[in-house]
Image (cartoon, rainbow, N blue to C red; front, side, top):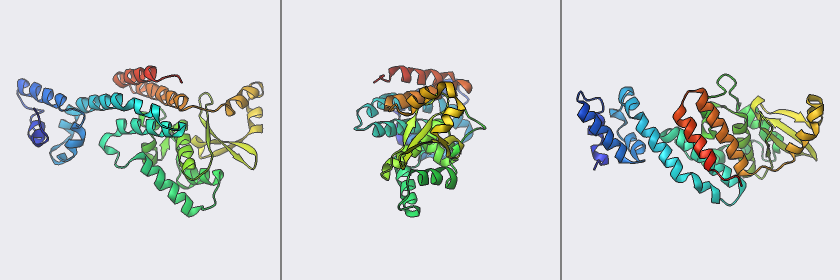
Length: 275
C-alpha cells in the first residue's frame, strides 16, 4: 500500500522509461484516494509541469469522487442561504482543490467586516456600490464561458464572474450584515432585487451594479412586463439557484470541449432533487 512517505519516490517514476513501472505507479496513485492532492502539497518541490500534467487525470477523478461523496451535505442545511453557501463552497473546492487557501465563509466574513468598517450604517445600495464599484467585481465579458466564472472564491480572486455568481456574493454578504438582497431568476441574466424606502430596485451585478427601476422593465419589454414582475416577486429556493449554477457549468465545460466534466455535472444536475 502506498503511503505518504513514499509519494516522492513514486512521483519520480511517473515518466519512467519502463511502461510496466509507469503502469504500476499510476495504479498506486489511483488507489491512494482523495487525499493525494493535499498530501502532494508537502512535496511540491519535486513536482514539475510535466509530472503534474501526467497525474492531473488522477487528481481530477479524485475531485469528482470527493464531490459526489459530499454533494448531498447541503440538502440538510437549516436555511436556503446556508444550502446555497455550502453547495457553492463544494463546487469551489472541487474546481480549485488546494488552490483554495481559505474557506469561502472566511472570505465572506472578511468582506462583510470591511464593508461595516467603511459604512457602519450602510444599506443595500451602499453594499452594491462597495462590491461592484469599490472592489470592482464585474462580469467576465471576455471569457464568459470559462468554468471558473461560476466559482464564488475565484470571483474574489479574479474580480470577475457570471451574473448569478456575483448576485450570490451580494446576497450572502448582505445576509451577514443584516441586509436583505434576493435573487431574480430572469432568463439569460440573473439579477438581484432590493427594497429601498419601499421602492423595488433591480441590481445588475454583472454590469457594475447598474440600477434597474421597475419602470425600466416596462420600457424594455412592454409585452412581457407582467411576466417580468411575476419573476421579480417569485421567491427562489436553493435548489432552483443550484440547478441554474449546474446548468451554467454544463454549458461552460461543453464550450471548453471538456466532455468528462460536462457529463459529470449533467449527472450531478439530474441527481439534485427538484424540491
